[in-house]
Image (cartoon, rainbow, N blue to C red):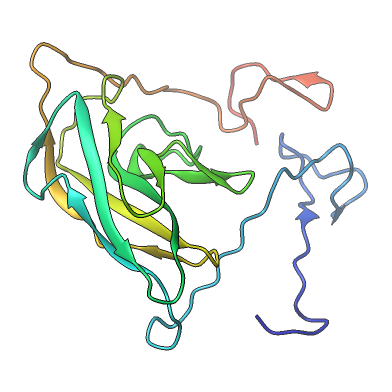
Length: 201
């Protein structure tokens, strides 16, 4: 990153409240009643100029069937720093944990700086992670799996995906029921006002 006074991240509340009304005091820095629980900054390096870990998913094999328990494994190395952790992520249809309305996507995001809602993690570069699919919805399309390889310096490299994975669970079917007709500004209670169903500005 570039050092100096321009190397600053500033968060600012928008001029409109949740219901579309203009904030009584206009746009301003975040107040104590508008908390921020964490911010993740991603810095992308040129892989040809930065020493980084490398790896690939070794289990499961591409274009294969996977069942109720999926064994996940990856090979990873970095001659300049030990491998600290491997996190497995998947691209498939599931609950929208990310809250962006996209149900089929790469699932796994950071919460308080730690990976969550992903397929599983393991310390180091050796081992097998068991992914329990008993709550995963039936998949209308093949799935993909990739690995986030983190070395001891905190540098992360994402492997290429293993694709064409078909979820086969004889005798088990899980349906994903998505919410419909949810108001755009739906919430429980904000700023002392209860929001009732109905479209808001």
